[in-house]
Length: 219
Image (cartoon, rainbow, N blue to C red):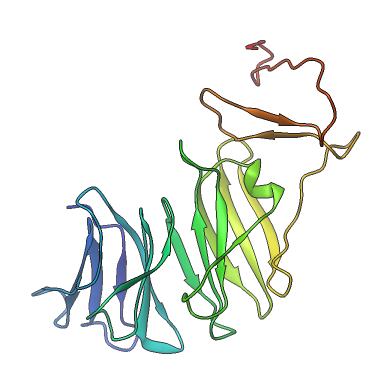
């Protein structure tokens, strides 16, 4: 099976949790033997667990990110429940500064644009942070660094390299892209497959031409 997530207890290296495909296993003897602790995980055989994080303020609380959403346990992994339904959640992180603050990342796919999710109650409820940065930037990977009332988001993008920006957790606001000439033009998603949306803030679009990075016209 595929192992995406590994958590080693910082206070006891013999205690390890891993994800294998759509299940979670626990070892208390450094990996010599393993026990399935997937009770409550309503994951299909096609689902996959991508990340597993423990609350630094509560060693019995874990969150995991899966293809079908976010799951939570408050008893060390013995019982899980789904706390958020979404597609392709890949990354989770608890704040080490403020108890309750959690961030989650959803990368770009054929079915959705990239986005960031925020929870202020240790994952019980989630809010999608809306900003043009996500709608217009394709990414396969994200990571996060918390401050007390903000979080730095690092995005490995498809065409812009590594992009970093800050989200104010008191307002859940981040940066917005702006066209230098009008401040109105948006083109998304990025990357695009068969459909793109060109938004000029309600104004009538007369003509659209699309070029590759090498200057070849494709539309």
